[in-house]
Image (tube, rainbow, N blue to C red; front, side):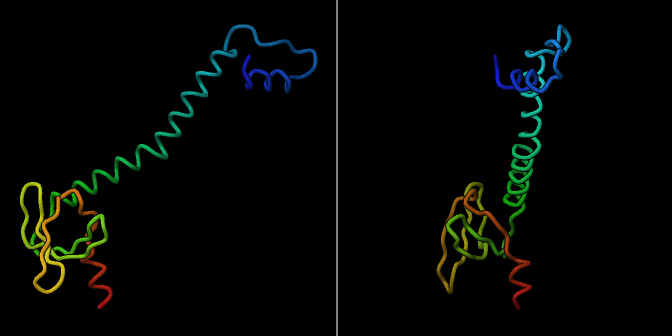
Length: 115
């Protein structure tokens, strides 16, 4: 039938028959599927949602003077914030306008530790 049923029957003591009613082959399969979903939710989906919420909070709380990093690895200081874009000062008088969603990290604390 399926591999789990075969393994359970093979490990049963000699002379014991297959379980009748109760949690049989079909019930055991559902328990395993639900267990795999719970494990996947705990280790994959939940942490990813938490990370997305933190990133969204970071982007909504941006203010002028914050030191940020873009997805492409460009370091800059926030000069101006609009609804969907941010103007960052990269070096000297070089300024770039980037999409707000491309900002991934605030390195203000990192910069203070390096000095």
